[in-house]
Image 1 (cartoon, helix red, strand yellow):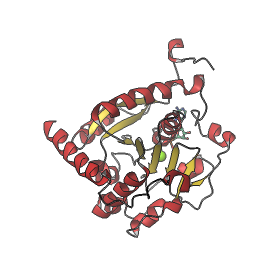
Image 2 (cartoon, helix red, strand yellow):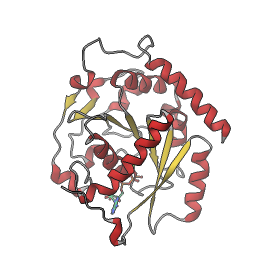
Image 3 (cartoon, helix red, strand yellow):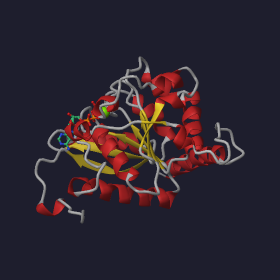
Length: 267
Ligand SMILES: Nc1ncnc2c1ncn2[C@@H]1O[C@H](COP(=O)(O)OP(=O)(O)OP(=O)(O)O)[C@@H](O)[C@H]1O
Ligand SMILES: [Mg+2]
């Protein structure tokens, strides 16, 4: 565990150096606001609701994600971290649903800016879940060794989305390429989000997520109630734990909730 922590600290400090004003990273000129330059999209609340994205507005349905957000922010702040991978043992546990809800919940905080990067490159789904036009391909420019900020969309002042409409043939190769890491560092240096969420592939079906884990500070494991087995959780946790800090397990798709689990906020 100490080795992981020291490797993470080293990676983090290398990234921090790039975040320094003198570092590389395509910095915005003084006084300009690179978030304003991102093209803004409006999303249809009906499409969001249909896809179980419930946190763009405050309320009882957002409450559990808001608690997750607060705990996450505390851990990130305590450790000086920004990058969170969201993965699961197997497909379909709800990674993308959790990633979107966490992103919108974080972005409702007026002083936090969030970048959501879709790195599940075999099964990109966020464009469809958000009802956006199918012309987003952030990863394509990365594959060509360049950044295209035109492919990063903004929703409101605090949420930036780097999404993909098409899958990629060899995700692990692209995700493990040093150039990909450098380009994501460059995006972070330019936009300086408080949190970067990465919607990743499932861990136990390919090495795609593993290929990028060295670039994140920590990971959340999403599991599906009544679907994910204890053995899958154990294997996934062990694999994740070798490469990054596991923040915790999100139990998704619970059919039965205790009365107390439904938190109600004053609207
Ligand atoms: N809490 C939930 N309750 C009911 N259904 C859910 C819940 N979360 C997600 N789902 C549904 O489960 C399916 C898979 O969700 P999602 O796409 O978020 O999972 P994923 O882990 O990202 O999948 P993939 O591995 O294919 O990318 C979707 O149909 C989604 O609507
Ligand atoms: Mg997904």
